[in-house]
Image (cartoon, rainbow, N blue to C red; front, side):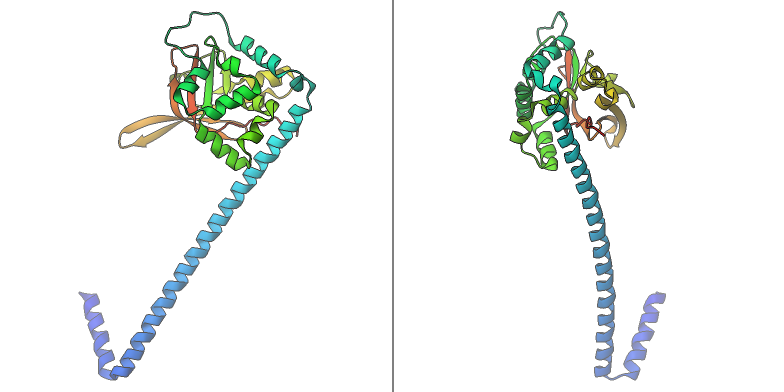
Length: 276
């Protein structure tokens, strides 16, 4: 009520002491002033938003550039290694021996490769395993391991960030072996119930690095178990941290109860085994 009374008094003062033309000019000036203030606010907000976007883009581009340089250095390192270039098939055979032991396999259990083929959303993963000489390992139903499997969408996003095509990735078998082994934890089929916060999981790549007298920590994954709250209640989300990238488990416990369990993830885990 007080605001209305004040407005009425103001209008009376304006109408009583000014002609219609003067009143129109004053009103036009007032409107122009309001427009200028509004435009200044909008311009300031736009400039702040553009600065934030530019900053975020710069951080993203710097991270992508680092990933590219790390992978390039790693590829050169593996390509220059006599042990790595000696025999891809021999490496794959060693992988099978390290992860497989004679055991009774339940009839309903599939190999990791069979799980991927049945799902139909892991064509890039299967092609990478084939190119790296690891198909026999993933096709072995006696394989005892925990496998974090990136979907086709995960590979597409990773390749886009790295500025590579699938053809460019598949041509470097040593780099492929390093990346794929970084997604396999040998020895135990760990379900989501077995994964704990801050848990360290040595991968097949860690075993390779340790054998080469290098930093085995570079081949270790770290588990982060996060609590998520929603209208449906509380649930847990599992995040897998690698050296150069992280991924979230989007479909856990595929093939649970079998020698190898598969957790589908939304990103490709990239190791950091480049020379300092």
